[in-house]
Length: 423
Image 1 (cartoon, one colour):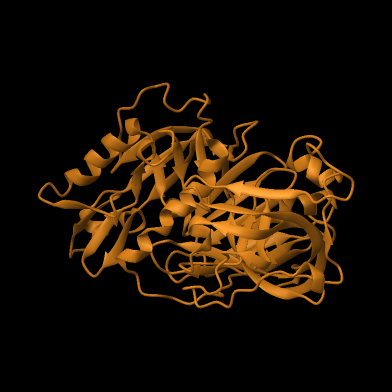
Image 2 (cartoon, one colour):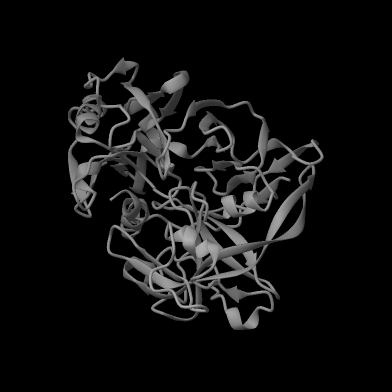
């Protein structure tokens, strides 16, 4: 079986990618952020304290109500799903009591609630550019209280859809019911918005891959070198090992790219060397910005990351620079030690480098790969049961907005979502 998800995109500085899920009986639509850096699905629920009621994305927010769904049930703390969430028996569990869902983020934001189980309508690919609805029973978080940025109406959605590796993720739940294989692809269109998101075996295009680091909670790979305009950075030989840092994290739920000081400093020096007279300023106490009226692809260098198995990832200036006004640009490379709560230096590549590339996550073979691709086009996938090959096209359920300085702030929340799990 192959599943397809529509992808929306907020065309501003935060690069927020989201999809629409239909949940419950009768079903209601919920817009949830797509995040490969976390595991569970959660949505805001009826009676939620401090949940946003409107969104700058111009989408209608909806709160899930367990009482009005004939197929919805609370997950109790004595059930297997709850034990899996807490890696063992739930402490102090009483028969019939709820299974708590609490997630605290790196910026102090928190969502609190409990787990429920209900039907989620999924689009099964049944032909070329054709899908049919099917139901899957999924356990997910029902949030009854939000704090911090999660309560803000800026870029607000109804929840977050985690596509991590844990047994509690939506992908793992579907795979355990033998509905799908643990293989999925996404192509995030950084030009016009939308993109492709599909669960199933990719047939075309062909994608070169690199091994995932074993025993890591996230999608971690081993980086071998960094080049700027074809020149390799002089970096310590032990910088890219599988030590406590776990290699390089690939995450669609993080907007920018975060590099340890040993990579960040020489990379920035080479990037800015092409424009020695450029005057930079710090915006929002975090982002290095400057005025530039020319073509950034002509004025700044290309950056290439090299990984195990000779897999490379090239990032062009128009991808690592983002515009906040007509002639004002900011740099997407960030010093990770300056961003994490504990000063931990990590290497994390987010949407800044993943957009406009088809990324394949093959958890069956523990690999990840990518190729530069037109995300407004289509891909070919193979149905596991029939072995037929079908075409899956791009979707776009979002509307554009005008970038402005105020939209820089949500970067912190997207980064924080991952830092909670690695801190």
